[in-house]
Amino acid sequence: MTSLLDKAVAAPRALTHRELAELLSWPDVDALFAAAYEVKCREIGRVVSFRGLVEFANVCEKDCYYCGIRKGNGKVHRYCMDAEEIVREAEWAFKAGYGSLVLQSGELTGEKNAAFVEDVLRRIHAFGGDDFGVTISLGEQSEKTYRRWREAGAHRYLLRIETSNPGLYAKLHPADHSWERRRDCLRALRRCGYQVGSGVMAGLPGQTVDDLASDIEFFAAEDLDMIGMGPYIPHADTPLGKDASWTPELRKERLELGLRMIAATRLHLHDVNIAAATALQALDPEGREKGLLAGANVIMPNITETRYRADYQLYAGKPCLNEDSTLCRGCLERRIAAIGETILWNRRGDSPHWGRR
Ligand code: SAH
Ligand code: SF4
Image (cartoon, rainbow, N blue to C red; front, side, top):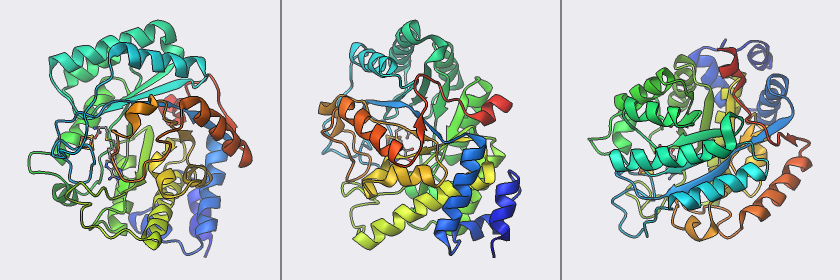
């Protein structure tokens, strides 16, 4: 019964589609998490990397059916931080020893936005240099824009494919949102020299275990360096979330599914960076720690100024809305020490897979 776990621990990228599906439904969930954690400790160490997350704007040109800040949601109060504020927060993360930063926003295209982001990146690079890892997560852009931002100092890019199933993708987005274009963006990012990260939501309506197994095969086929996955959490002001039933049992199931995805991904890919998404914490106060124990090695503490946080709600129940970044730092440090892991202060925490390639 345990031979499949042993096989997965022994060698990377050795599992078939059927075996991945089997792992995702593995009856002894503790044994599944323990096997994934063993691989994580061997490949990465008993260490966690921090990325300070700045959600600098909630204006978005897109209308994804699941997302709370989609352009069609008229209830959202829109904001865009100015360059000085973003750079100030980045500097805070640098001085606090976070080692790296993630800048995220809704998707905006056009020259004005490209120039704004370029300016912010150059200012951050001026004090952080290449020792301070800068990740951006700004949606689908032209290859020219990706290149421009890479040259201005961004090292990594996060762009979730959301689901590897184009048919399911089509049901979750308006007709002018294209799965193929998103996949091509991942390839363009690779050509521009980024460490490339992607991921999916787990528990989407209509998604099957086979879809999730295919998602992990997609991560392998695209040779990704970083994986960011989280449970899908309905948002009442969205087409997909407005009638969703959301019971304590469902939350528990969704959390476990998110953790199973982390574990199965670690067991197949071995040496990539995997983030324990904040959405896990939205479902359980200890969700991120559970993510680490299921094979993740990255946490992205929110360092956005508190007054903006309530306006950046992609899903319901976002945690830490009122805790300032200093509090978050202390609280996280304690939680991580409690599970016997050490934080890698002042280190970029690059994906070992990227280093090897
Ligand atoms: N606009 C950029 C980055 C911000 S959205 C982009 O879309 O790439 C970041 C991620 O939030 C999305 O990729 C999606 O996977 C996740 N997300 C959005 N709505 C969500 C929901 N209701 N539950 C869980 N995750 C959600
Ligand atoms: Fe915009 Fe990203 Fe939300 Fe889609 S998921 S609506 S692109 S912020």
